[in-house]
Amino acid sequence: MVWIAVPEPEGGAFSEDCARWALGELDALDARAGDGARRVRRWLDAATLPLGADEARGLRRRAAALSRDELHDLARAILIYRALLEQTPSDRETLADLAVVCGEADRLPEMLELRREELRLADSTERRLLLRLDVARIVGEIERRGGRIEALRANLDEAPGHGPSLE
Image 1 (cartoon, rainbow, N blue to C red):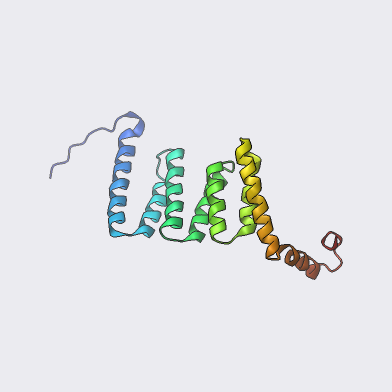
Image 2 (image 1 turned 90 degrees about the vertical axis):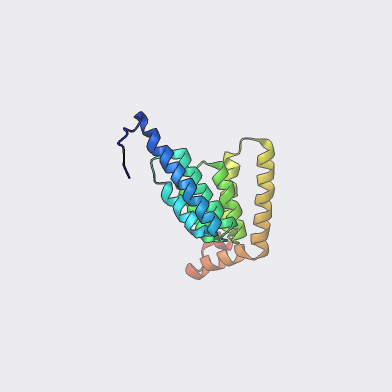
């Protein structure tokens, strides 16, 4: 086989295009083989390539969604979404997706914290109304399960007579 050296075009577009093409081909092979775990690892690895911040975030989001939806690996999806939020704490879409996964994983205190952050960032009245309804539902469920009493008892176990916990 004869290889011809071809200079790369300016701006690195050639290598980026090749990386995208290769990733697509490998992903298609893994999808046909039903290897979701490999697809997640590959997308996370590919997110470290110099493809741009938006594309890297998109690959990580795909990995998180696949972890949740096809692999049912909620813990991994939560880790990926949390890592995304560390990079961009005000990403409303990631906040919403992470809140859903926390709900599916029955991690209601985390879900509540995320919904409250979404509420702080919400830019429409309709969204704020929906989020407040969800916050009320989550708080109700936590209270129904006795989370409030358990938390206060834990405080009193650690610090008997703690004033705010007694109030």
